[in-house]
Image (cartoon, rainbow, N blue to C red; front, side, top):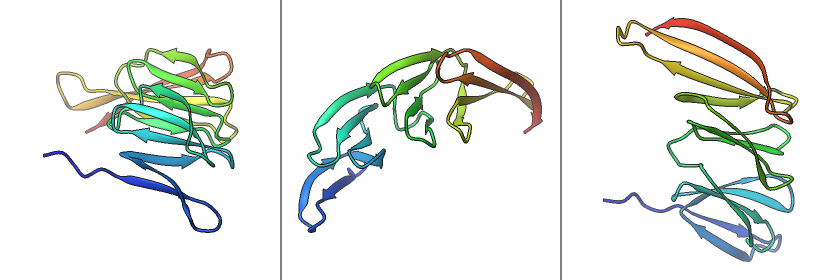
Length: 151
């Protein structure tokens, strides 16, 4: 049995419906654009007024982590690899090999992407947690830290 589809509708200021997007969840980026996460593992960057597709981005499956930068200019999504998209340039800027990524986030100034991976060794007693911080402009690794956590 397939889950019920979600329908998000955009409305004009006078209350009339402009369009409906079946199976998508939307996040406003600015007045003119929004990002919709689709059931097929893609994301759609669309124009707010018309719903017109600007570009379809791959690697945004419902099960995989994603993060939108505080300034709404960057989108990080997926794992093995994590993809970093520039929403201003509408292009894939960097891909990072990351292992099994569990969390993605950005620094408050949106200058760096934080990727957290958790690996469970065969003993299963503790998880190895690794946090890598990358510069969003250059893709260079800024910092890497690892530690162990009890399960």
